[in-house]
Image 1 (cartoon, rainbow, N blue to C red):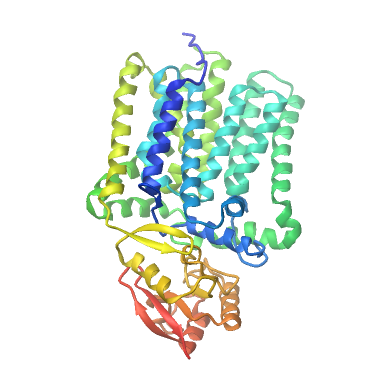
Image 2: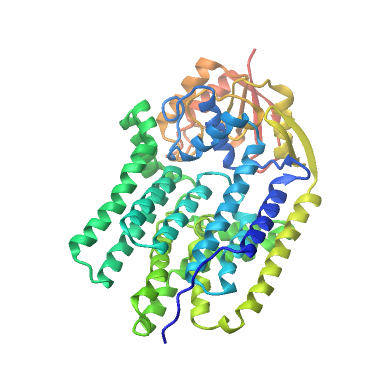
Length: 522
């Protein structure tokens, strides 16, 4: 039973679906006609970092960050062209989703024959992006470059293909350091297996590995070289390698407990949206990691029925998928979704190969595509018309925020601060960019765990003493505790002592964190 390999080609259907995806993402990110929907989430950290860079500060030297510079550099260049406006986040997210969809189609068509090739990208966008992917941060941009690297090696295995694949893996690491590393590791394993199956001499295989890994290492160094030379190799390594290795795991969702926490949060999510949220959470939490078993089992069963030229493509996607899945040190529904494009392709290929739906592929694809797109636009309709919005004119442009205590916090700060003023948010640095405020310290992410080492707390206190901001934004949990009662890994005592001695409570919000605003003593 010799099966023919698909012969991929773009067509009008691809472009039509891409247009539908762009419209869908626009409706999720902007309230019609052109007001960006505000959300307090991690992309604000990258906007804040890029804003500090735009004002002349140097990443890693003047303020701390532990990711590689790709996300910050992207927004820095966008701000340099368009100005530091909040709408840029929405358009960057739309571009990310459209690129992910497009390259997912390209890769899928190299593996899956017929209409079924459209299912992986459609599932990715319309049964995942709404909950897990509207995140214009480093974690959603880096998988695009992995898809491109895989696509290049699907097209050919020459030296220029290897060279280009290594470069695109370095771009993945430029945004998320470990993602490009696990991707190039997967490609390296494939190069070795491919060489063995093609009966190449070991010297040739080793040379191909050196070309792949060498192009990755050299291009990644060049991408990061500005910051390496500007801040020093030691500071760069301490920030982006040593800190994540020692402290990253101590954030509550940055270790293996994140898997159960993600599922638990889905079942606790309120309202009708929470009921819908459970299904994709379970799907990505279980199907994506299990999918890496599909190809090995099929290959073991049918390895003698097809030649290696046929197995080469699914083997490549399977190996890279396995490395991406196993490389996640804090697995949960969000992180599995981010790298799910290749596992989704592998899943649909397995269903197609086993002839479970291949004979009815056109009908199955049409029905599922219609259901997925309709479900997606039902979500978009709810976002446009079912949410209680309030328009907020911020220094970064008008935004549409939902009426809740978190939005009230931003409105209060907007009415009581001036753009360019120093303020300090203890915890995650969300307020700075939308309100045009400045962090008076080198540090953010001051948490009550080992995620924040004592030297970061000391640096924050030093900055507060020097700049003396009017307002501190934090929570009761940071100060309603004696030093003797603090957990062993809680280093925030000196910060609490300084704030309690120099500030007084002026406002409390009934949000999830019970946020408090304290004002400096006159």
